[in-house]
Image 1: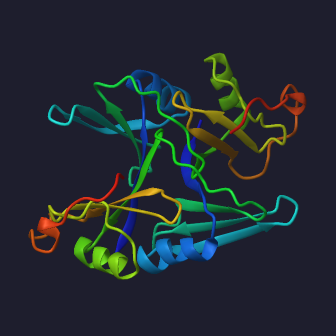
Image 2: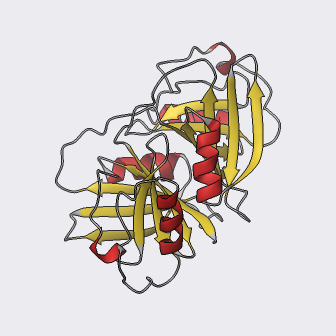
Length: 142
Length: 142
């Protein structure tokens, strides 16, 4: 029996907001989109560059005002990045709260527009510890 | 800025039960384990064979009786399999409920021991539609 991890699906209330977060800010790319008139939903598949065999599937249900709740059995999605300070600055400038700042030059947590917890990890060795991150307090939970 | 999808983390109440489900039944392999005496947790990283660049991280917190709640912002994890009937039979024999049976020879949904929704998708073309799957009713939600 062969098995392959294909994707992780999250529900989103707004495709454009999600694409701004996952694509413009985090650097993922849209690789496929499917609209279902019958099911009244749109699926948008995102992937990191050169990693198209594993996707993040966004499900947008057309006719709902549901605010998607958060559970504890799901923890987070983790992405490795080449410069954790640079990406945190980019996120901050776009108004994203850095819930767990990269005080150690290595790890940060933020939230997607639908409250999916996102872990950012520095590739390789931690960066040199520096302000303003060093003294920055955590905010909320992640 | 480079970005790479590293892992999806889920919280589990019992490592052995989770390993039975994800490894013995679904076919993932343990690729790394980390215990933290200080944080009182164990992290177990699982991956599909030949796909070790993307992991499913299980977090087991030692001193908690918390039953991990389920939210709606997270949807499911999807795995492609080489024989969807064979894996559903294996899951059934182990007592796993097939919430959405593969009536179409293509897609099924089950739940992990911690209620993480798992989508199983047949690789390539759907299998021939056949009983008992064809007439099997869905159970619960997924």
